[in-house]
Image (cartoon, rainbow, N blue to C red; front, side, top):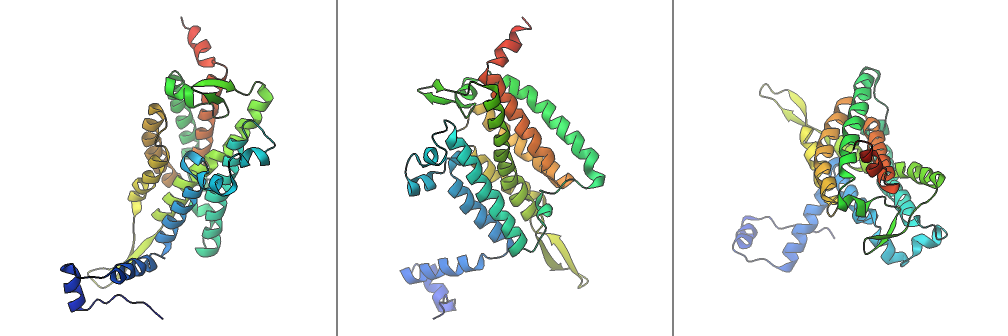
Length: 297
């Protein structure tokens, strides 16, 4: 049986006067949700749901409630930073692989059109300039931020802390290098989720309007506002992070989104994002920030 909302003038009048039933409310919700199945809706729905399963800051809380506490340690054979490793892999599968299937088989589009392709030949110079500019500027701010107590309590992620005191950390350079290489998965995931799937996906949506001379014209539905839409999810994901990082989130998120749309690729953004975080980990892991500062006085 097909459910329909009664939109007759009499029913509209009753609803405006507060005369409606629970069934009316449920039908209104159901018919509204049924309309949310176009490309924009699919992108937004899937982003919300997949990010929800990845969890706040990638903590996989829903998966932990399903599999029980300590499940990440079991499947990583009690690797001390096993939870981070599993989070990187789960995030990549949820927020990169699944959206790529949606892009390929639901939208029938090229994955490269969502930022995962290399910059086109005429954009490569801009991409190189963007890469070195982003890496240079962020490295300076990362060095300054490394002296913030909040950042020191948060990073490196592989360090285990109790009441703010480090009780375990990586001690060998080879293990540090392996961890940081795997850490790249996280930045592919985070950048594709927000600057790839959301940004390029919403920015590409067009609607057809009829002009005054009866000609049909295609215009962007969201256009540049897709930058702000992806920022809603990006800033929410960073709630609770140290203050320098939350401030940087807004600046970085808007800036790199503009760059990505211009050059048509997120790779010149992913790599510096990863590298300046590797720098942050190295500075804090071996107290290199303080050693470098001591050289100047």
